[in-house]
Length: 112
Image (cartoon, rainbow, N blue to C red; front, side):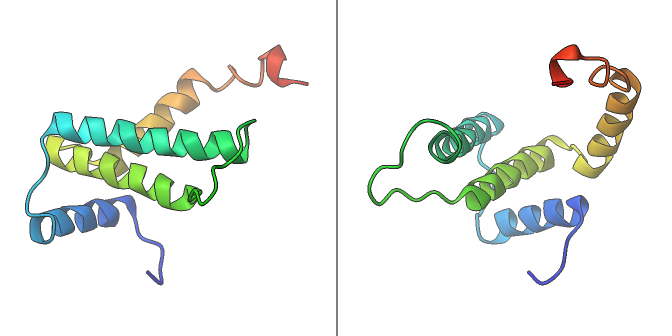
């Protein structure tokens, strides 16, 4: 892709792909299992690239691809459950700015 896309455009792209190429959505429970699997793949890469583990010979460590897989499955779950992620993200930012406006600044653990 040559341009940035909005969250809504990304959700629509996932919807179109699933309805045309993917045939149909997996069940929500299956998609939750797939999301867990993808997050595990992100964790594996993080442990090898930023933690103490070393990569196995020939092991693929493509963090960008695995993070994109996580986004894809999150968007699929949102689509099939009627969640507008753009709206949800905006609401979440408001919540964080109200609830957490002083929480991290006042946290002595983060001042070092």
